[in-house]
Amino acid sequence: MRRLIFITLLASLWSPVVTAELPAFKAGPAALDGYAAQGKWLVVMLWASDCVACNREARQYIDFHEFHRDVDASVLGISLDGSDQLAAQKFIDRHEVSFPNLISDYESAGSWFEGLTGQQFRGTPGFLIIDPKGELRAQQIGAVSVELIEQFIKANSPAGETVVN
Image (cartoon, rainbow, N blue to C red; front, top):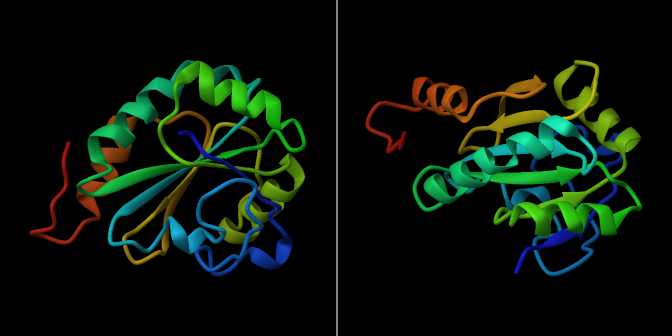
């Protein structure tokens, strides 16, 4: 069952990224550390149900998650649909999203992103790449191919660490 968890990202949650306590909307971790710092890379995708690029690119991130989740990486989605949980759920159902998702409003997520990265949040899609220790390693506003994400993970993984691509 696809999970959609309602969260409010507050400015006070900027650092560290993985210890933020979040109220749960449905079953699933109520803190980001339930997803990050689990010995695997975490790709956080900030998306919105009405984002053209998000809709166009969704399948590649689902495939990335399915291919990597049992080995070296997973995806966590954060919908910026705010109070429109129905629109977010329709996106998840339409694309058969298999990775877990949280939901926030644009302003709160933008403030969280800016506080975490030092960069202005300019819209969806947006990406954060968190290493297996739970530290932010990269951020990107705009679409990015999974091939580039895989290359980044491979280039930044210690020698001998399993990295599938």
